[in-house]
Image 1 (cartoon, rainbow, N blue to C red):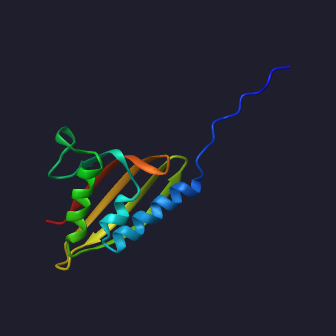
Image 2 (cartoon, rainbow, N blue to C red):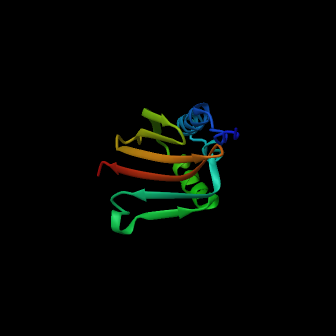
Length: 130
C-alpha cells in the first residue's frame, strides 16, 4: 500500500488577519514603518487613479519604492479609516476612506496577495474630490 502525499502546509488565515490589522493601525497612526513591516522586499504595488489611468498605471517595484510612497502619505495631515475588509486564504482586500483637514475626501480600494506572511503584490484604485 503506497503512502499518501501530504498537502503542503497552508498559512493560517490568522496571518492574513495580522497583516490587515497592521495596515489598519499603520494608516490610523500614519506610521509608514508599521505599514512597511508587512511588505515583501520584492513587492509590486500597482496604482490606478486619475493621475495614473489604466493604460499608464503606476507600478512601484521593491520595498524602497513602496516605502517612499507611504512616507509621503503618512506625512500628510489627513485621516484614514478602513471600513470594509475581506480576508481569504493568501489574500486580503480593503476599502479606505481618507479625509484632509480642508474636507477633501479620498476613497481607495486595495487587493493584496500574501506569501510567507508578507504582501507580495498589491493593486490599488483610488479617487478623490477635486
